[in-house]
Image (cartoon, rainbow, N blue to C red):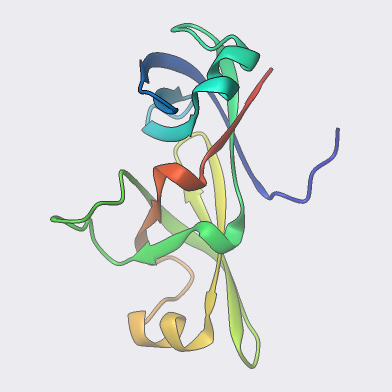
Length: 139
């Protein structure tokens, strides 16, 4: 299946913590980073997710925020460090390609945000992704 979601990161489930309706699923990405996905309990069961399950974490580029440093005191669970390898700026939006261990992430942010953060190719950034915005696919 071909998807329009640019961010597709392979990894392995390390833990599943079920709740009444939702579960948090911890994934170790192939690049070594830890990622948390908050998905429905039904999805966990349908996908047969258990520790050791090979998955692909899917995140739309519009759901990736960027910071110039790690951020403390924030509810966003996923903070993935990387370096900018591509920056395309339009009149309103910017597309930022970030090299991360084991792959690449794309963030679609406003032009104003890219300017305010002083982003440039080669600068270090941290990709911020809410756990509720991470979908999982078994591979």
